Length: 136
Image (tube, rainbow, N blue to C red; front, side, top):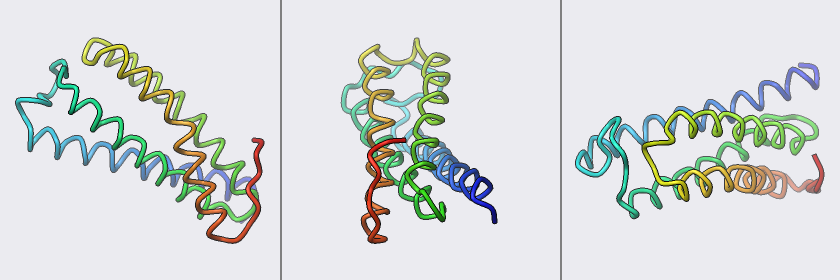
């Protein structure tokens, strides 16, 4: 597969991993904690909000790792592309759910997407034994 096609596949793989696990995990949390995470209702429980942020960081790290694993060459380029894509998607989703969570949640959630995704990519590159590029 050519370099560009492999990069696109890597970015899509990371995005799909994040999205599938986020939807499944949040649905499971809503089923387990309906009084705290009621569908379509504001979330005000600080513990639940922090838990969602931690879950997002774990998923972003995993998505970056998967993206770097799938990318054949220049894995960090694909990881950066995923990080930017995830941030843009995150901005859209957070804007659509603006009334459901406090402002601090939106800011922290969005602020951690890029560093967590890059961290996951770097973990994979280091495991592979390659050098980690600092730039995009």
